Image (cartoon, rainbow, N blue to C red; front, top):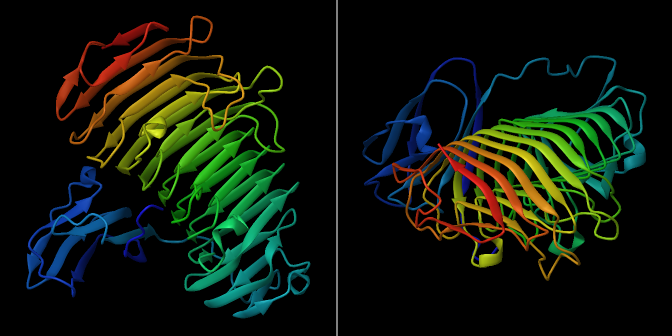
Length: 426
């Protein structure tokens, strides 16, 4: 958002190990980094050609001469299974062009967007219950898909939801789920949305697998979840110009708690704000909400760049609006050197920009097998608001920074105030 820069992207499907060659044409290649570093890929360089073996599907950033931001995003997907056939009578095949939504109303079970550019004339395509929207590889749909009070919907494929031509303040989302249930989103890419890539409000039983999201505008979060439950997010790549994944209670027209949310095997890159965020918004007019039973595991964080101290934290819980946040697990999180921010930020807050009231409390938080590569680091915060709005029961099991184990709350990388109790290091 603050400095939009050139980058590239390519993708392919693979069912066996593959040998890759990439030619760099804009500069002489002296060094190459392939991230996440946890993949331990060792490339070869010969005459500006980078080569390496990819043994299994992966979501990679290829970075030449230490230039993180003029990079190639390279996605090796697993082979697609059970793709619909264009010859199936239950499939409505849509050729490239400009589409009025009334033309897409059909009894067919599947809307199949074929390769090419597709424009939704009214911008918003409302998907009814029981429907599958399939966006084939090479297809780009310029429009927003909305699932409003529906169930049993699938949105999948290898193509794009493409919103780069819409103004920031149009606030269109890539996919919007409203009072919906039994929704599956798989494999697609969501490119340069004006607002959230996936917006979830008062919904349940949502599965998001293998999507990729890129955004450059203010407030263009990756996946935001409000007053929703039973959400599974896995194998995603999110590079966003705001929070990559945010979990809230009540906001706008959505009311209620958020619980039972799991994020796993993700690669996250926050050009602004937080890769992982919980807690800001809730029902401040009543007793707040409970946000609980959240689990993050096997996640690589490639960047966290936030100039405002109030929004630091690669892993952040900021409980506001009378909210209680509890029973949150961060397990096997690998955080690479980032430009500006903190490793974690646990605070009961009253944010003057968003919170009419402070949060209630944060409790029972576990950090397990957390690795930060080191580098630019402001001390992480654990702050209660006051005696009545405190933090209690935070456990760190194997936290390392630059290869050194952190085994005490007195470590210089951690700051705490007097409204914190029950902090344990193992």
